[in-house]
Amino acid sequence: MDSYEDCIIFLLAKAYQRGHAELKKRLEPFGLTPLQQLILAALEQEEGPSAGEIGKRLVLDNATLSGTLDRMAEKGLIRKESDPSDKRMLRVRLTPKARALSQSLGQARQESNEEILSRLSLEEKLLLKRLLRDLQV
Amino acid sequence: MDSYEDCIIFLLAKAYQRGHAELKKRLEPFGLTPLQQLILAALEQEEGPSAGEIGKRLVLDNATLSGTLDRMAEKGLIRKESDPSDKRMLRVRLTPKARALSQSLGQARQESNEEILSRLSLEEKLLLKRLLRDLQV
DNA sequence: GGAGTTTATTTTGTATGCTAACTAAATTTA
DNA sequence: TAAATTTAGTTAGCATACAAAATAAACTCC
Image 1 (cartoon, protein in one colour):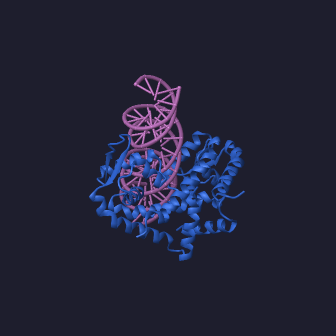
Image 2 (cartoon, helix red, strand yellow; image 1 turned 135 degrees about the horizontal axis):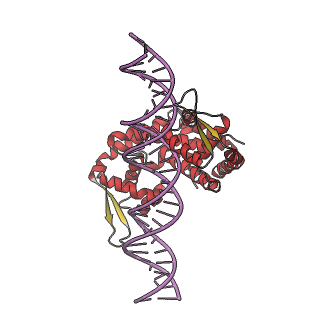
Image 3 (cartoon, chains in turn green, purple, red, cyan; image 1 turned 30 degrees about the horizontal axis):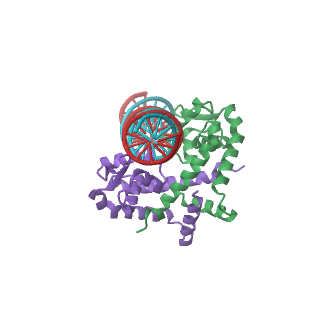
């Protein structure tokens, strides 16, 4: 029987933990969290998605999103509009404040990635990404 | 600028998320969570460690451990004894109930690992583990 | 066209995971 | 040895994450 040190889930947890902490630290000056940054990045690729669409794209529970979107709206990063044609749905839009942050946030993400991956060669980086994608679904 | 889909932290988060959910589901019948199972596994390798020693071994915050150990004690999986020679410290010990579960838990962990890694070849599995270990500090 | 069903989001409750502040005990040091 | 510092653990507070229940709006189907 493998010990927990060989458990892939343990290894994933610790690698994720490190990456998350690294990015969190770098995002702190901008006043948002890794998840919030991720949601902003998704909003840049899609105009006015509903909460459900964001959740599907980012593989996130609706319940998790609900609170996070509220916190982001409070900080003035997004606006939550009600869809006129289906009042059950939201339409989430970026504010100018969020757009102004976009560059800096992308850079923070990039830097964190480089920091995390610094010990790997280019081939290893690509391989790791491929393997992690293979774990999905 | 990379999009978030290429972000290694995002990929790690989603791979971890899937592994965690898989193991959680398999542990549910035994009434404990992935973290609690992990702590039990660590306790099998070390007799009566303090909370701090467990935290160091598992790379876990003391604050996180404190609540989790309480929940495990409530479920009768561990006992929290005070170290007589240093009353600041705990000595955490497995109960017979926890020892009786050990086999089944190890098997659940093993099965989850195989499920997660099922799409990878043997070489890829080993490579992935190596790469994930390289991401640690 | 209204009852029942489905869909989108929110709420509630539990479990991590972290920081910061706090308590208690041990150690250092002046 | 008394004061200052360090160490171990807990508590409080915030942010994920998910399941299950609740709400509200839209849709189905007779």
